[in-house]
Amino acid sequence: MEQLLTNIFFYILASAALIATLMSVTRRNPVHAVIYLVMGFFALALIFYLLGAPLIAAWEVIVYAGAIMVLFLFIIMILQLAPQDLPAAAGYGRWLPALLLGGTIAACSVLLIMTDPLASSRLPSFYAAPRAFGQALFTHYALAVEAASLQLLFAAVGAWYIGRPGSRKGAK
Image (cartoon, rainbow, N blue to C red):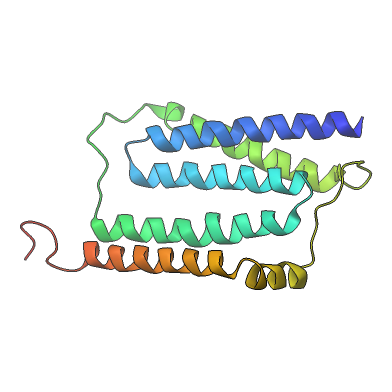
C-alpha cells in the first residue's frame, strides 16, 4: 500500500512539474513564466523528498525556487521586459492553470507531510548528513564547485553589462 501511495505521489508530482515547465516555456509574459518555473521547482523538490533526498529537496527550494528565481525577476525588472500585447483571457481562464498547478503541489505537500510514505518504505535512504555532504563536495568535487562559481560570476557580470545604464539603443 505504501509503495502504491509513493508511486501515485511520484506520477502526480512529475506531471505537475512537466506541465509547469511547459507553461513556463510557452508564456509570453516573463513574470508569468518565472512563476510557472517556480511551481516546477517546488514539484521537483517534492519529488526529491519523496525519493529520500530531503537535503537536495531543501536546496531545490532555497537555491533554485528562491535565490535564482529572485535573480531572474530582478533581471526582468532591470531590462524592463514587457509582455507582448495580447488580449487578456476572461475571468478564471487566465488563472486556472496556475491555480490547478498550485493546488496540486500544495495538496501533495500536505499529504506527504501527513502520511510520510518514506517512514516505512523499503527504498534505501540516500540521506547524507550536511557535514558529510559538504566535506565530499569540497574535497572530491572541488573543481566542479569552482567551475560552477565561475559560471555564476560570468552570469552576474553579463547581467550587469546588459543592464547597465545606457546599454540599450536610444537610452539616455
